Image (cartoon, rainbow, N blue to C red; front, side, top):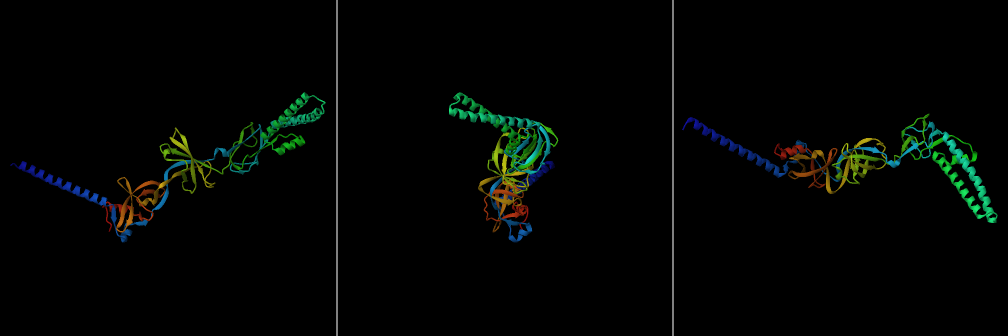
Length: 382
């Protein structure tokens, strides 16, 4: 046998021994890991808790699931917004309110000088004069027809003419009311017959001035807007929901405004997708009248849904992750049982979970990382 052949044989035998040993070690290592992992427990005495920084606490029962966070805008309901506009063309002589002012129903907001108002008042007084003449003829012919002095046909003509005068006077009075004159001002006009071009525009509701679009001294056309005001007793949230998440929401879900205790309730889920950002509009009605948020404000919210299944709230530090799964460590007489859980959602420093737990269990709320290391055989419990 040649020296080269002998050397090759020895090398082959050595390689076989090394390979077999390596495989044995790998198998033993895998077996150890599997056994340690399969035990799903960490044995540790209570006096060693402090060494690992372990703190115990109980999971809190929860009934709501935090679904998602999203941006939102505070808006005023459309039916609570009003426009104060000029009913007649004219010159603004005075504005009595500024943006942010609270005004009451009937309060004078604008004083306007309108030549067109003079013509309307003149036509109204003319209609009143014709009505009075018609009333005189009506009363006279009514008496004559009862006495048989005039024919029935003439009485019918007198009645029709009187009704026409009455309708015309009523029409011109309504035009003055639409222009902004009050019943008291119209009654004063009836009494004095003095025309005035001064017109007062009043607040239609009790609310807050949101916008002013005209200035004193400006000439404006009829129906030109001057103020926008709103009743802020109710506010809405307009929420942009990613279209792929809209199916998980339903009307009635709760909404929590971040960093506040203000809540709202979803009242509408939109039926169309915004083509620019692929979101669906959801509307929520804010409960109460909070003073810390204002119309037009942009903020972040979290949508929360009620759950019929048992849930628990724990600190995020109580949860350990391994191989894509989540676990908590439940205290028992031998140490801790490693219990698999499902994280449903998160709220700040807390998570909502489900699993084989009860409100009476004690879990490690601090030190879960150290317990995980011991569970996987990466550290020592002592």
